[in-house]
Image (cartoon, rainbow, N blue to C red; front, side, top):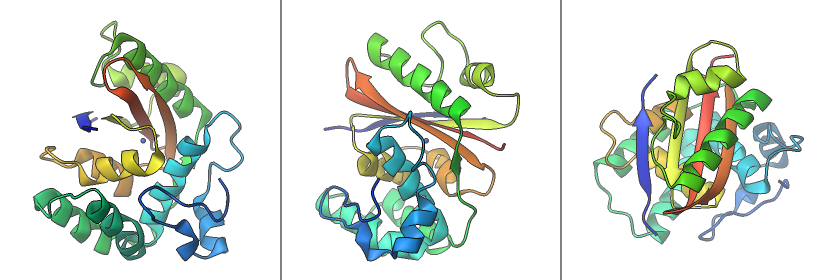
Amino acid sequence: MKFTTILLSAFASLMISVGNGQDLSLWSKDTLDMANTAALVTTMTPDEKKAVQLINLARLNGKSFLIRVAMPYVKANDKDDDEFVEGLYTDLRNTKALHLLKPLDALNKSATHHAHDMGTKGGFGHDSSDGTPHTVRIHRFHKPVTVAENCAYGYNDALSNVMEMLIDEGVTERTHRHNILGKTFHHIGVSIKPHKNMDFNCVIDFSVE
């Protein structure tokens, strides 16, 4: 199933397994607990929580994520070792001990609003179907701070959505990847919803506070 990304610069058990044979049990229980910052959020689905956990695992130790998740995903999905994949590998090798991203109800609501809007209308991108810019929409749910948004299409599982955003194929500035692996943002909201034209869409919203 094809993955499509569109961006605008300004997205649970302890021993869970992810698709294509990757097993998060290779991490210690303490590390999985630490990364699972959405564990107690009752409004998120298991895959939405898992997306947060995967992102935090990458932020905590990019080299381990590279070996245990990224490389197996690329191999299982017959991805070319092109500039996007090689660039991700380099960035993961340089990622270590970043702060954890913590879920925020306002961001979950903003992401859910957009994923439902795009899904039911068959739309793409960050602007709402009524033309509202993504920053204005997020600020309606949250306070006016620096925010960003990742959108992905075609997958309903956490692993595929996170990995495709990290690979960021076709995106010159790799903004999806930088939102996930950068130092700017501290909070996150995730929503995965059905999509009229692409089967599913995933929206991840970020904020500095």
